[in-house]
Amino acid sequence: MQLNDVKTFLQQLQSHICATLEAEETGATFAADTWQRPEGGGGITRILADGDVFEKAGVGFSHVFGRELPPSAAANRPELAGRQWQAMGVSLVIHPRNPYVPTSHANVRLFVAEAPGEDPIWWFGGGFDLTPYYGFDEDGEHWHRTARDLCLPFGETVYPNFKDWCDRYFYLPHRKEPRGIGGLFYDDLHEWGFDTCFQFMQAVGHGYLEAYLPIVQRRKDMTYSERERAWQAYRRGRYVEFNLLQDRGTIFGLQSGGRTESILMSLPPKVEWHYNHHPIPGSAEERLLEHTLQRKDWL
Image 1 (cartoon, rainbow, N blue to C red):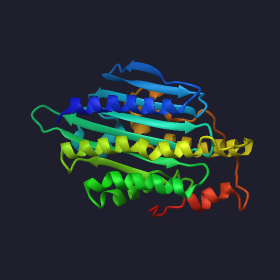
Image 2 (cartoon, rainbow, N blue to C red):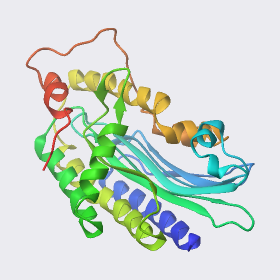
Image 3 (cartoon, one colour):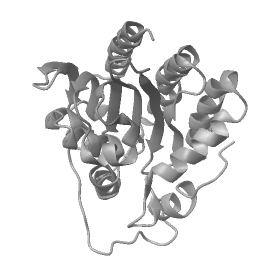
């Protein structure tokens, strides 16, 4: 395993994504916060706040170590008991200011567990998903077409399998509704061999900007009012609920003694909850729920 190659790629990916997003922004730049983890390792969290295009954007790199898995992870992977572990990855969440621009999330990561005299246990994971507040079919089609195209060199079944996994993962069971329109999600990826799995990580990392940037450019200058901002804040509440209640990365990070500020950088800056709220029948807000967010074959 060439762990240094993976780490170098992840560091370069973080810098590339931040530079590309900054090029779309006119009101703010990324600030870097370098941190160390007492238990081992550290990372760089880069945050852009109060921009004209991006209200909050967080792009984090981390490479952390541990001697014992947290209870939630150990219960599911008993073969990891007694092994030292390390995890490295890039994780990002982008919350645009304009409600017509979707929120996006991406993550690519590698986990390795080792013990003296034993073969290492490793796997890759990651993906990207899109959470619109207003539905545009052409955006969804572009997002999923980009995801399919990056998967094709690895097999014709990769996109449909990882697309379905994403639809099932980014789902709020207590609401009985999806968080967004999905994309790709995969975990425990090792059966292709290390080199091919690493190549797929790189394809997903680079594919994120190819999928997201054209949507940002298409929607960022659309005119909106306080009505659209209020709906955006309300729907962001669903994002908070998922990240705190369902997301395995958030739960693992907090239980393993991770850096709270970096883990919770994914949360939006402004959010609202309203009791038993329903959009106006026939409105664009209702169309998001009744059409855009319904699980479908976008291609």
